[in-house]
Amino acid sequence: AIDPHTTYYNPSFAQAFNEGMSNTLEGIGARLQMENEMVTIKEIIAGGPAFKDKTLKIDDRIIGVAQGKGEFEDIVGWRIDAAVAKIKGSKGTEVRLKILPAGQDISAQPTIVSLTREKIVIEEESAQKKVKIVKGEDGKDYKIGIITLPKFYIDFAAARNGDPNYKSTTRDVRLILDSLKAENVDGV
Image (cartoon, rainbow, N blue to C red; front, side, top):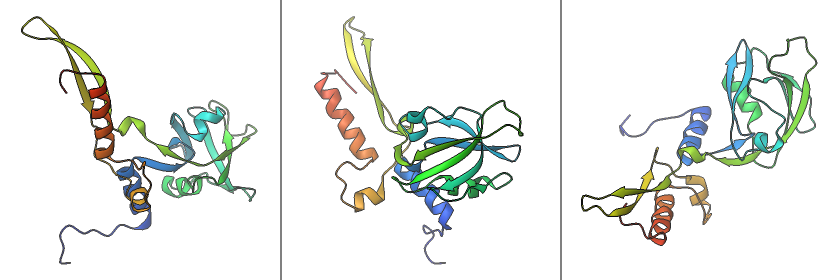
């Protein structure tokens, strides 16, 4: 009531905020969307468990989730956030998914996919660099480093826990600047 810069987040909003700020998430490495009452895989994140396993495909539908060796829960008709909460989890834990492959009828025999959750860094939203050769007004070629920064981010939890390699805009841009210096660019 007093501080205009403080906001209460319920647990699911707090988790989403922390994942967005840290550019990381713990789970199977797939972006999910609700389609016709079913959780559908819309993207598989490079480097994540789903990517490494190569079993899941775009437009596969997840109809059941089990934690480790536990019983399957039918998630058809669930809200997307409730279903995602069952699929995500701490790195190193196992999740089993009951999958209806893309294009198959609802009456088809589902397949079971078992994945071990991991911490996934969302690279496309991290600072990136490229080097371009630009012709100057004097006719000479100049090597110019370009840093693309899609958003600001920091992994507060990893920084607090003393992880020397925690993700942050400052650390990543510093590393990029050091690498551009090593490449002897003429400007950034």
